[in-house]
Image 1 (cartoon, protein in one colour):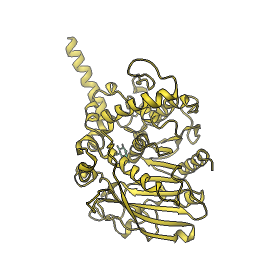
Image 2 (tube, helix red, strand yellow):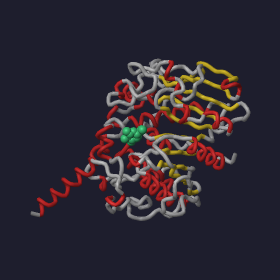
Image 3 (cartoon, rainbow, N blue to C red):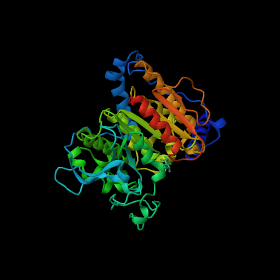
Image 4 (cartoon, helix red, strand yellow):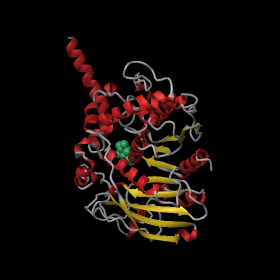
Length: 417
Ligand code: GTR
């Protein structure tokens, strides 16, 4: 009888986790892993213990259980400025299109970075970000090279999974390039598909295959999130030797799936000085243990190529996952972190994103930094917090003018501009 009941309950739990819930009253109580509890049972009491012991321990837990291994092998990238113009966008910025070759001998393995630098600021801070469908979607600037790679069939102007002239500027609303430049920031962006196209078989032609011998890692030891995060680190490599920008002030922003990749990049590469997660949801900023919106099971069913193999085994047993989103956010500490949600974007679980940002404050406190003051969810369009900041915007899943206003203000303050 007992066995039958246990079976019935676990069957019901499995069914639930395969479905999505957007009713807050159905969220069951859960216990988050204690981010400060060390493997020997003692609690971290200061920032030194965190940096030397706990941080590396938690980082490894994420490699083992969620993202897969992040290649530690260093590679010497080569790059060339393929095109530049000091008079771009009616003279307000310098545009550079830089090709980064990743492989020491195979010249077909490269990524293209589009860079805009405001002309009226000396060594500006720089936003870095991956884009969803090619650099040419970021601005209507007709000098941006059209990506020749595979693009999603949902990409505007795409024909047979390739960009066309009609794809130019398809995503300008998400970037607010002019405002960013006017506020004195540079932008460096690359197409996520330059590292790995976002399909189940994308790894076969992406860096997880082409770089496997160089990086000493097999394709199944990591996922697309890892490949994208690793790619962001290569953009940082490039920026570190471009004297036109201040590479000590790199702010990384990622939206949705690229927000998950941004958090993993920020955790993996501490040269990134500030991280912004825009509606990254499940596998990003949202607490997995809450049964709300997308679940571990759903995300791995729909996108089996995104994470490491072990993550796929937790679909029916999320409570046994040794990590949760608040621990991922904690890996950004003490660097400034902004987490944002949108009211209508229930799939990303706004409350779960808020609660993990709140929880991460415990680690920021070790450094004397203030996170979010209370665990009471703020009203829409009322940002809260200091070094960890959060807002719930009204509206849908997107990056909007409102979001950029907050991020630019935050980065200006944190970078002392
Ligand atoms: C959804 C996915 C989310 C989110 C989103 C996006 O289909 O379930 O995790 O990443 O895509 O990237 O827009």
